[in-house]
Length: 248
Length: 249
Image 1 (tube, rainbow over the protein chains, first blue to last red):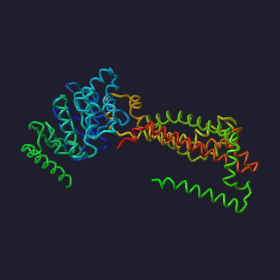
Image 2 (cartoon, chains in turn blue, orange; image 1 turned 180 degrees about the horizontal axis):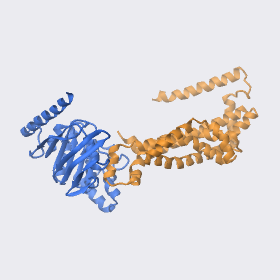
Image 3 (cartoon, rainbow over the protein chains, first blue to last red; image 1 turned 60 degrees about the vertical axis):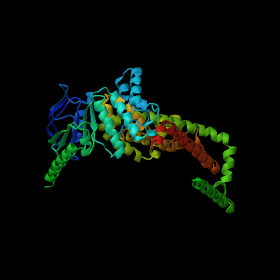
Image 4 (tube, chains in turn green, cyan; image 1 turned 180 degrees about the vertical axis):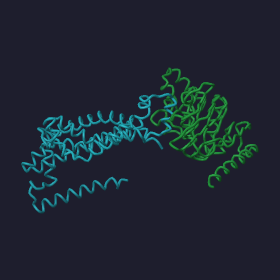
């Protein structure tokens, strides 16, 4: 499991994290929700090793490490495909960088292309296909990482509702079919409720956990599930409380 | 669309007709301002002479571009890799842009001689800045998310450079190169003015002194054609290399 203990990060006088704890079980889907500017992105930077913590530790499967960058795959709702590489070459990027056997990697990627309905599009450039297909290609690339932990960054731009729903399906596939452990930060409550096994509501800086919901509703979920609606009410109430507190 | 393309052509024809008419009506002597027809005639009649000199200038420009690119690429990469270097070099680069090329041209001739080298360096100096800056901006324009992705894939600096930053900056590189080739001519010609044995700039100075204004204009015509030709080639090359850029949406 992913264990974050007593993580501290300061930027000059600003305490972004002041002893932040979080555990994510292996194979689970953990979602972090918080007001913008609460330090979610800093947490992510600490996990990926973009910045170094001022204290605390991170461990994966019992092994402590400065950050989990080298055991994580990264996926964003922005597909991050390289526009000058074909879909196949994009999917092969992790293998190319790791110096893996090209023939075996190509075979593996081709199987994933078939699985995700992208076969026949291997030679296309990302600019030539739809947004939904690009995301499927990004998923193939994520699976080519061979890493169990997947970090999902909050969406930078709002996707349209239909693409978003299909992406949710793909994320669940990542968890259920490919047994990945997912950690997602988002500002979309609805999205969090649909996907999370563990949902955490975060406070403003210094970031702490205000609320932890364990959601046992089987997936795929419907937005009108009574338990989800109850959870949503609780989450909203807690967030309102946090925001009102700040206004005063 | 069709009409829009015709407008520049019509303007040029109007301009040339007006010029020709003024020269004939006022009987302007050729050593003051030759009519376009006279320039055209000399451009054809003296083609061997003009081409001989144009060849020298073209070689200077091409080698100047090559030299400039050969220096600009490592410099921009070094500046990108080391922000401290960027901070210390940027003011110098900007200041160097404020120095008129005319001011350094005589010095370069003193240092590098009357031969081709001083002209190549002159052309290189004048296009170094646009190429370096556009490349650097291209490298820096790469989104943070891509860098995180490459970091997590375990890519080192040079792997990231080869697979991400360089292709990312290529469209910028070609933008800089287009600006570069259109102004490289200036560097080469100024170098020839200061001192040379060959080149269109040399021909212009010589012809001017002998009041052969028609030949000066013909040289300008050849220079313009050369600049335009280079621009078209770089533009086409750029469109080919970064075809993916135009495909997006």
